[in-house]
Image 1 (cartoon, rainbow, N blue to C red):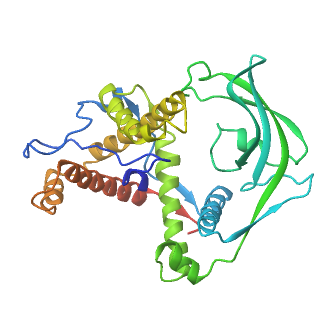
Image 2 (image 1 turned 90 degrees about the vertical axis):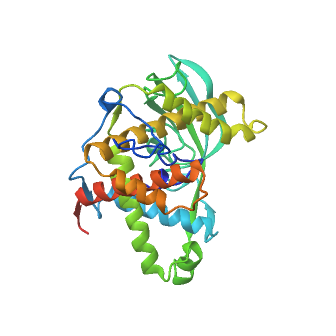
Image 3 (image 1 turned 180 degrees about the vertical axis):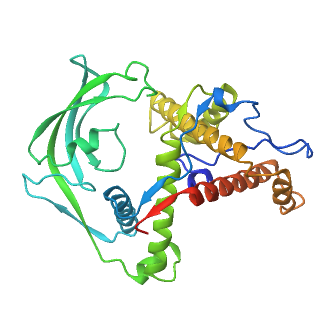
Length: 323
């Protein structure tokens, strides 16, 4: 749930939200102040979620995190694999691809010598997983469907075919993790402490992002809050107009704003329904700030408080297997 605690461009950011609190403090920020949130969101089950720590899914996510941390410290070697090597999760595949809708290539669906890290979630569901097992030198057709909420209305919910040729497979050979690595990657005292922290983060991500937010459904987006999030991401991405086209930036803004708004709705719903945050909790958080604090600092403090409360609650409700 860390992405609801800090603003990060590549993922969603903290929810500006509030529970159903009173109006005793006129400076208290109020968000999603609706009598009935069910008109906007259908929240998935958030109690008793099963987390199997030895399942292939969880182990793969954990391994991917370890590898990404090793990459961030350049603790790896790249190896171009021989032709005929089957793609594995975590490999980088250099590919040519062409996407067609009703037999006609669509804009933005074609590229040559594109380097795609398998498992990165860069492409729509089914693209990367569909390449696992495909060998370098082979060409495959991937029959996929764009998400119903995809930013391009021309492609949203549409069935397409991507013809993909794998030119080569690059595999990362990672170096051994040590206590020194743990201290460098995050000031952990040793490797054991690092692994325990990473496992906890992956548990939180699985419970919150995959099971709760991922399985919840937006009925409709509240326009005021959605626009607020669009404005937020637009302000961040405005500096990239010389790198990306305005259409590309608009698409990213739309996607990020909808994703963030969904998280806000889900968390607000849970915090309110379970009465996780009281007026007293919020006032105490505000009182801990400096006397001359800004409205943004106050907002961030409340956001952090609600995120912590919701996170603690859903994790306490989870059922852990093979822990």
